[in-house]
Length: 255
Length: 246
Image (tube, rainbow over all chains, first blue to last red; front, side):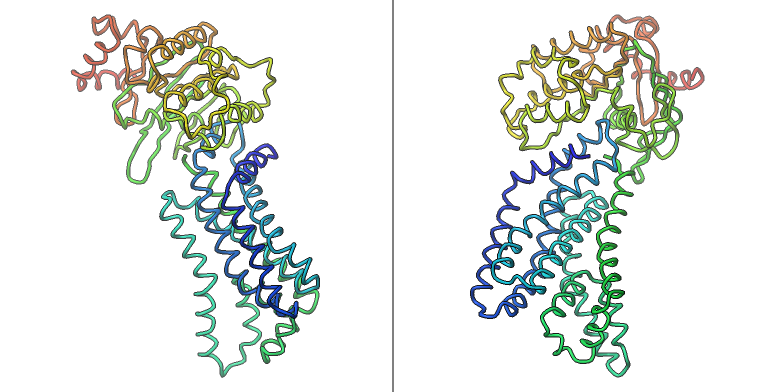
């Protein structure tokens, strides 16, 4: 397994996109932190950019990479290797590279400017989000043969998680604003890894006071160990489930 | 060495292989021929586990290949269109394969590597290579690990006459080593002096599987090309006859 990871990583390191991604994140975070006088405010501003950019880059870059390595995958499948090993190694290499780019691009400025709980949670959430969206990209690309359609699907998936989901939730919240839906909101937020990350980070920077009663419920839920471990479990499921499905389909795929 | 038992494969609505059963033995050099789209490549890919048939089974040395992978250590495969990672060099591709196959340098078969003079091109990236050079790399990789079974899909397509002769000599040498060699090609004149058996595929099923001599004797011709042309011209009665024999 380590051999294939080695070749995937070697291939990715030669890829300019990942370098540009690292640099953009680095420039973004440093400029945001230098503009804001208060580090907490810096984290809050950076949060919105990151929750938008990281899922987008992770899912699109991975999908394009997977379609472009179709030859490489075909070559590996005709060799004495387990298909599961091939697929999981590609995931490890890809996820490792994207997460590493994020760690360098955002982690270093955070250590320099905002070395505190909110900053650290921001870095951790960004890395988990990278893995989640690489995993979703693996699923999308194994299900769809055609490159253009596959990339289209990943853009749609990103739109769904980044914009449409929140719009639907807002709509529902307004419709049911007369009912006690605060507890249900915690459950609904679990359906979107981006929302989970947003809540986790916001709770660290004390703006949750502005979120009213729901904010208090969130604080109550995410503040205790049980709620926190459940959240971590859900995030892990968001990585494991798409990856598991994609492996299942890859094993049966005709190349 | 390879037994194919009643395999069928459908891509969507298209039935590519229909209940194919074949027995391929060591020491044979088999020409797998047939019109475009008759299922030759799909059959080959099923033997390699790259395509998973909907029904039927393939046995390699007596054991089923479904969900297996180690058996591919004994197969050298030269694909129809060799597709490699664009920004790896020839040297890196060769190293990677040796790494994957866990082969020691001393056990490798470097005849083709030397004959094709790949040494001088080790640093060229795969993306910049011509079709013929890629074929040379594919051929080199197929023979490199001294496999028991060689599967060559259109090996001479794109190769220049000199390289074609080198490859044919190599195939002849391997044939005498009691290996199973499966070749598909549309250039029948290339196959004439190589093969011992002929499998003719038509619309997803083998029309016949017999030795080259008996095919030539039966059709009263001395060249494979002529024999096949004759079979194709009176296909309908043949088909009935062979289905009875099969």
